[in-house]
Length: 525
Image (cartoon, rainbow, N blue to C red; front, side, top):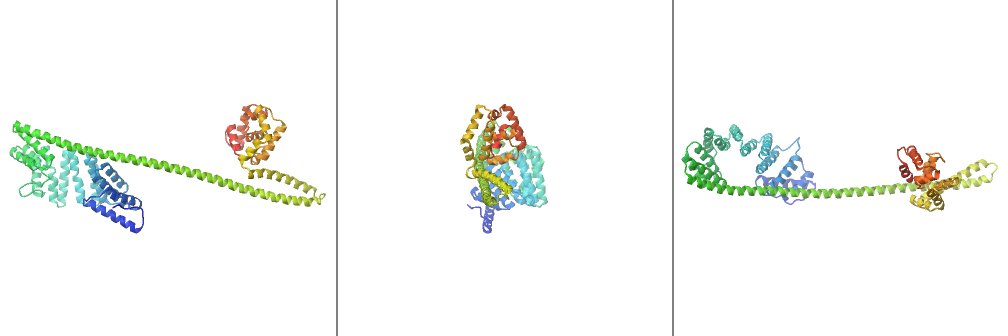
């Protein structure tokens, strides 16, 4: 049954459907199958199956866990099956089976009120599927829950209602069997007349008794109920007969315990203390055996729950580990993509700058040629010649700046500038607290024009040349601190900070300090 789920071809789909039908047939015939047989089917149909396929696969996985004594895992599988239901169209018969199995788990866990809830759901979906037999069986199971809860009146009502429905559908045998379950609670509440009528019907029509009046093997507990009836109606010889019959023919500890307890009660009425002591001692011995059996079942149930919890914890740890790995992979991809985009942008920018440099170079050569021609006729073209000379100077100046950007990165340009003697000279004056002279400001302007043409173009468009704001921006771009700038102007640092905030608002349209302004300006090449 070990099947690999993953293919989606028609042949594979048919093979998986046949495998699912095969497991379902094994389940219906109570033949064994394992969790390993069903898990590949669940994995396949969760990806490629219909709603009914998924419901059936998860249900069969729950049945496999149930048969291996793994009640919590089985219950989880049944919940998963219900989550797969398509509410617009679904298999009502399968849903009835799922709810019925969940009710059975709650019964073995001693959760009888939950059992009632899920029995009711199982009955509802059986009615929707028009399966009368399944609906009545699920309703009849409520008798067990009410009996365990000690609600005897409700247990009797359930039996009588179901029996009446069996009679309506023409099944006297099933009605007799159902009313047989009501005999014991009727005796317990003292309704001996109705109990006797149900006993007669049960023995006559249930087909569970032979011609000698002996009930079929495995159902000897009935003799206890019949013995109690005779005990409570004063027919003590008959009571003793049926208690001893159960003691002799009983097939398990429950029968032996019930028979011994009945005889002890009988001999109390007959005032035979030796016999009372004998059967009470026997009852206590059976109690020990029953307690041992119950304790073993409880330990098995707790062990099953512990194993399931441990598996759930391991699965959670694995999912957390997988999630961390996926998050790390995602972050790595984002970082790599960011680096790639930045590199691409820089490459495109460099290509554009190179083309601009080439265009200016061509224009310069053309202007030189035109200048030579104009010099031949200087007197007639003096004004035009002056314009060409001015344009040549501008282009040479720009080419010098753009050339440095092309062949030197911004970091290299900064490094080259900071190594120059002119930069060191004005930087030292700032550190010493000396006020800048006109020559010093000229040096600042030359450094910006030569090493930082991009910044020069940016700031010229936004601030008036030679203004205080303009000079503050120049010194910030040359990595001067606020205190050094204040020394250069011969003012206090707060004054420079105030001007910086004003510049930040005017140029970048943001509120901020001198540090914020410096960060933005230092980004400009």
